[in-house]
Amino acid sequence: MSQRILLVDDEQDITTVLKAGLEHSGFQVDAFNNPEDAFSQFKPDYYDLVLLDIKMPKMNGFELCRELVRKDTRPKICFMTAYEVSLSEARSMFPNLKADGFIKKPMALGKIVEVVQNTLNNAAS
Image (cartoon, rainbow, N blue to C red; front, side):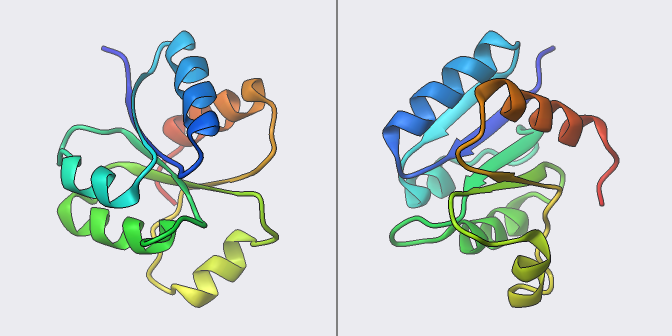
């Protein structure tokens, strides 16, 4: 069975390209442009990976992560951002942050697929 990914980014162009690229690589992808919709449609015990943009209106990726983890701690979490935020900085702002990967945008689609595969194949950090 293919691995399932929840993708959340407020930019539709990004979700469209990433969803197509990840599906082409064999993943099942549910993509959302609104973090509140993603949260309300979230299915516990369903996803293997959650791919979250950090900077989104209404609810940022860190806040969405916190809420999703309350529903299901199993999926790996990978954050994406175009801004200068490192994983160590994110962990200092959110000490209990569950984060298994970090993608700096822009990144070539092939590299994103590689990061996703590596994150899914590695034990939780």
